[in-house]
Image: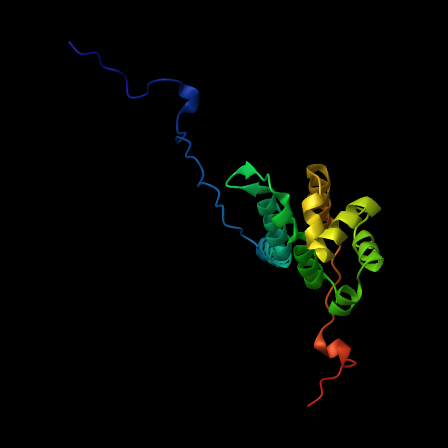
Length: 187
């Protein structure tokens, strides 16, 4: 015999109530125009930041190349360099090329001797080229035969100073052709 329940079963106080249905899930798409505006502004700011970072990366490409060239002078086939004499002769060339990229040509080309040392020292916040270190650089530049008399410590100090200068110098913005002509284009 099966158990039979009366037509009204359970709690009589809940008679006539329907079962609760859960609401529709909340949409992740912004519902108002204000949110679309905020989203657009954030997207625009991200694009501007990416553009500036890319421009800075491109503007500092010459620094990366100069640093790589100086690092290559220190090592041969992964081993520290034993023969500094031939390799050090390209340090002044690397410094000039870096300075020509970062500063007006007139300022770089006109500097030689003590004026070049002053130029290198004023380009950074702290002076990197002491008289002794600069004398070694000068000897490398103008007296290649004396490069064989340079000790390992002197060579390392020149390379350290050169690397520090390449990474720390403050480049001047280039003057465009219109500025040089007084702001008007001549046709």
